[in-house]
Amino acid sequence: MEVPNCYYRVSIKALILDETRKKFLLVQEPDGRWELPGGGLDHGEDIHEALKREIKEEMGLAVTSIADTPAYFFPAKNKSGSPIINALYETTLESLDFTPTKECVAIRFFSAEEAMQVELLPNVPVFVELFR
Image 1 (cartoon, one colour):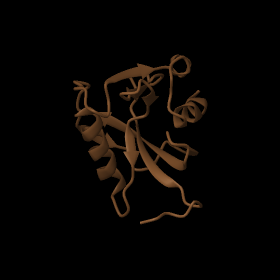
Image 2 (image 1 turned 45 degrees about the horizontal axis):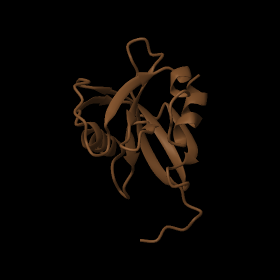
Image 3 (image 1 turned 60 degrees about the vertical axis):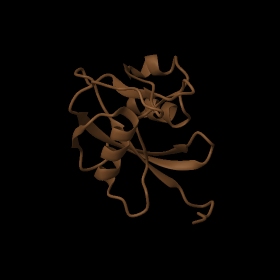
């Protein structure tokens, strides 16, 4: 289906915080850039199921809880420059026993300052400014 340029793709992201709640988890893509875990919401897909699916596909990890409402909601651009809407839901994982996949080669907790020192996908700096 062709989507008109005036529409934004919805990107569902996991906001996974460390025990201090001052650092957030990012995933490293094969090209070296860092991104928030999650992905695109398919038409008609349940938000919570989409986020569980994306976390399992990207990191091979199981989700234990997802907030009912987004902690952050903001427009940005995806890696190809198209407009997207990001909805970040606070999420907890069963463990951080991560196994690299074709979509995610590493995971790491970052403070806002640390995140701005690595190469990020375009939507992440927008989130970092909100998180500060």
